[in-house]
Image 1 (cartoon, protein in one colour):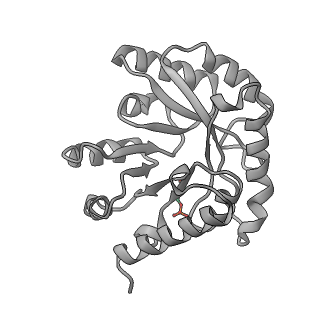
Image 2: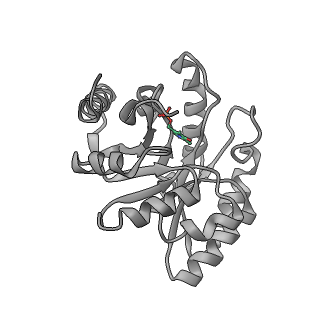
Length: 227
Ligand SMILES: *Cc1c(COP(=O)(O)O)cnc(C)c1O
């Protein structure tokens, strides 16, 4: 049995090695520790070990944990799940970054809430690059419309792109999907305006770092399997 500290150290070592291999500074990659379905005690442990970015995918679970952990003032919450319109008010202004925004209607909803709260909400657009599993992410063809719309909003800052490939046993199979997302980002007239790429999970984060990931979302490798 390994401890959380050992698993985290191992993950950190692998991130550092992948950054080194691809000529990237370690601080160009943010480790988002995905704590969904894990108790706040585990989050406190990871925080004590230096982790500051945590990812959740249920709005109410994030809200509950954020309240329990509000003494950890520099902890940053990332919402990595699909944002439901009626749950968005639990997230806007509380999360550092919403990773999975995928429609004009949702952009408008976030804008409305952010304006009311007097905040600028950072978001990523989630794209369904593989074309499979149409449930998550916008179609690639809709990217320019979404970006143009986001640029019109005063309280939403679109900072990049995210994708969640279908699960494959072999992490190298996701490489073309990550590469495609990066190319879509780079093809924008001002790629510097979309600096972030949220790609990579426990089983494929090294491939993601090779393809330019700025945010990797790692759950089970740090916190152990979820039940
Ligand atoms: C659960 C989840 C992760 C983390 O998955 P692991 O395989 O446990 O690392 C990453 N991204 C999203 C969107 C998730 O829902």
